[in-house]
Each structure stands twice: as structure tokens, then as C-alpha cells.
Image 1 (spheres, helix red, strand yellow):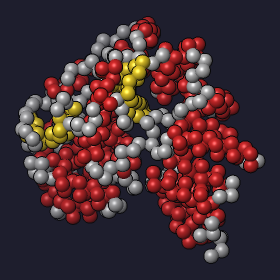
Image 2: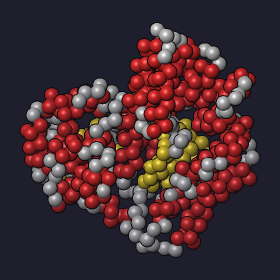
Image 3: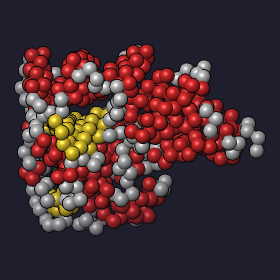
Image 4: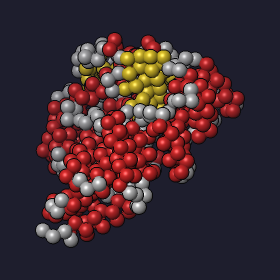
Length: 513
């Protein structure tokens, strides 16, 4: 099997490099984890800030700058291919550029604690305040690879982008297929390769029979094909093949059609109707995909690097012992590793008692443990120390709330929320909560603007539409309030959201017109 680029042609064999490279002999977990942590702590850490990413690394500033540049190139390609996409993630993306496998082990030890388990080259995890990526920077240059070693991290980043770009939930096949297709993107010195064949998906399709188009389109998150490993493997491979054909089939001529399809879906168009409008009858499309899977050459796209992202413009600085310990503690907290996280927070506090990060981490850990008072105290201390973490101020505001607050206390909460959206203008929940507090302070007109900003940032969230409805109701705009409350109810994803929306809808319907 070979792959072929649109400009210029290039051929290579599919290999199983990633699995072979990841295999290793298990060692004594306790001793090795201790030695990994010690080795990582002994090395100096640096921070590099690019326009859209923060990279923290123990591999030196040159490697950190390179990692930031690669992620900026991935983002630039997404923007170029999908100009309609919303790439302004609500949470910052922090990349840990690990010097080697030992550093990655120290950051994500759980993958090395199971004998015969997966030994990843990259890890992606989302916390309340940040999206985290940890990648090894000592791997071979991607020119010689068939599979992107950062596949899982790219997959997750693309999926986040897709969720923020569509008002409605994407069909499962389209969300997974798009993420799989883009996850094997390879960033090289002068170009970026998009749409390289995913070896394990192709192997799955060659081993068995591809799911036909009607079956793929019918799968939803509750289907066996999505939830059972033995069937999800075939579904994912079939969804990838479908999306790869829609984007790169017919010798690359399909790409403009694919963008047209995504634009229709983004506007809320019916997926089957949109497929038919763009690609013709579905039975013919199914046959075309079937023929495409059986071929030996696959088209992918070469895109020139974005010269508007110069490495020279990235900010770089060495991190103190306290700062690096605090940053790693935050990663451990999100990875649900409280022992490692608290060990590092203690180290950070010993080195710098005025640093806010350890208290931000303690707030996260206390929240995870259901310790509300401890979390309130920790976030309050972080705020007192001048925390620049938007979520610390947001959560501090939430934890201060009680039903019987006086105006002065509400004003104090508002101050925290004002600081939240100053630190992160893309945090929709900050705008919604600030809108609710502003309503309580008697300014429904200002609150409406804040709530509409939240809806603009996250149009799929029931909470934001409910806040808009509440503000409209206070302004006696009954008809508009009913529409927003109905929208909040339609978007509700859990019993709590549904109950809130139903109660709100009943209230706005009682408003005199």
C-alpha cells in the first residue's frame, strides 16, 4: 500500500512503527517512578509562549520553541483548510515537551504501571482550567514516519475545535472520522502533510469488511458500534475511510465539496440531505467509498508552512524550581494523581511561598475530593497571591455564593468574575455567571449583553441560553424569553439542566405581554 501527496507525489509503505516503538519490558514500578520523578526534578525547566500555546519543557528552550512552532503550524493548517472553524479554545492549551521517555513517565506514570500496557509518545488531558498535552521531543523526525507519534494529542485537539465550531452535536461518524483523518498530520521543515493514511484503520478494513454507508450513518453514541471495543474498532476505521474519501477522494478533487458539506452541516443542515446535495445519491457514494478502500494509492495534501509564525517571535524564559514544580503539580492534579500533585505543591511552597500556583492546584484537588471549604480557602489564597489563572477566580466566585448574600458580598463575587473574563475573554461560563450576578444587582440590560456573549462563544450550552432567558424575562421581553428558554430546554444534556430549563420556561410564560 502506498500514499500519494497532491503536491508533489510521494510514496511510502504503511508500517506499524508506533506499536513496535512503544513496546517495552516492565520494571519495578515503585522504584522506577521514584527515579523518573527525581531525574525530571533535577533538570531545569523552561517556558515558551507562542501566540496560541504555552510550552513547558525540560529539554531546553530550542526544543520548547520547536514544539510550540509545530503546534502553531497544526493550528494554521486547520484554519487554512477550515476557515469557518472556531479555533479560539475556551481554555488555554499547555504543552509539556518532555525531554525523553523518563520525563513523560514522571508526568503520566499510570501508563507505565501496568505490565504490558500502552507506552504513549503523547498524552492529552483536559482540566477545568486548561487543556494539557504532554509529548516526547526525542522521537525520530516525522519525515521517516508513517504514523504521527503525537496522534492521540492531535486527535483530541481537533475534536475540541470541532465541538466549538458547530452549534449542533456532530454525527458520530463525522466527528470521529474528521479527528482521525487530521490526527495523522505530520509537520515537517517546509510543509505539513494532512490526510496520511492511518495504518491501523486500513489494516482493520483489509482484515474484515467495511461497514456500509447506511450503517455508518446510523451509529450514535449509544450504539454498540460506538461503545463496544470489538465493534468500535471497525466503526472507527469505516468512519475514517468515509471521511478520507469525502475529503481526498477522486485524486483530491473532493476537497472543495467536503468544505461545502461541512459548511452546510455547520449551518444546521440535515447530514444525509447535505451529503446527497454535495456528492449525489447515497448508494453511488457508498459504492465509491467501497472502491476507494480497496485501492493501493491514497491521496493526501501537502501544505506549505505558515511563515507568519516565526519562531523568533516566541517568548521564552527559564522557570524557577517553584514554578516548574507548580506546573507539573497542576498536570498531576488533572491526571487524578493527588499524591504526586501534593508532593510537588509542597516543594513549590517551600521554594516560593508567594507563588499562587500551588494553591490553584490544591483548589482543584479539594474540588475533586468534594471538600468545598478547603477548595474555597485554597482558591481564596491563590486570588490573594495574584493568581493569573482565570478558573481560580471563577471557582472562588462560585464557592462564595449562598442564597442569603447581601449586596456587598454579591459585589465581591462580581469583582472576581470581572477578573475572570479579563484574564480569559473566551470563557463563556464566566460571562453567564457574571450575567446572573449582574441581574441580582439590578442591571438586567447589562446582564443581557454578557449572556449573549456567552451564547456567541458556546451556542450549544443550555446554561447560557437559560441566562439570556432570565435577563429577557427581567426586562419583560416575554416572547424572546420564551424562545431562549425553549432553546435551553432543547439543549439540556442532563436531568439538572432539564429541570432548570423547565422551571425557567414556566416562569417566563407567566410574564405579562
